[in-house]
Length: 290
Image (cartoon, rainbow, N blue to C red; front, side, top):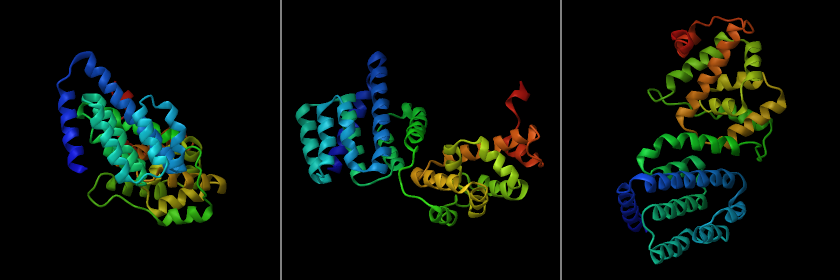
């Protein structure tokens, strides 16, 4: 089915590129809405399994797409599902935006059947969309992730916390985020004491903390966990487990949020520490430049 998919994707993309004005605006909105729906569903499926898809079918106006979802729920093999869906696709004579939306759903559902995580599904779907929509992708993904992660439905305990301390996947030397995470380790372990860490934990959002943790080394994770009550440590471990793979951009942005909060606490006199390194990392305050 690979050749069929890429040929049809090429044709639909060419048709869309030729459109202008209101038709293009409305079509692009429909594509982003579809992307959002697929990612929202992908997060829920990752947590609760394919049967939960049935709850979404009543929200899908297109009966052929609702049927596609039901095939997946019923355990139809990927090969059979593709065969049925492509037959319906060609019988319907779909073109342009309608064709691409159908293919987005098909790719998303097949990926969910394969058990792929939401980040991979997101990347698969994004690759099919017009590049002029790229600025909206990260925001939609982050919003879906934020809504889906609370509450965590998995089983976690202090053994999970201890395992997460050791199971760290750091950015490789020379890659995005590597230097920042090395600096993070120094700041949180050698500049800030336990009291300072507890002050930061009182101010920072759960999602921000769990996201930043994806880039922290074992020593930094251990220090944060050591300064949490046991129930908070378990909850944070659950959040980290659920988030799974993340965009490096989101990890580094969350680390900067922790830095910013630490710096604000220093300015307020709540934390007693030398702010020099934080000021170098954060750069000049935009308000001071005005």
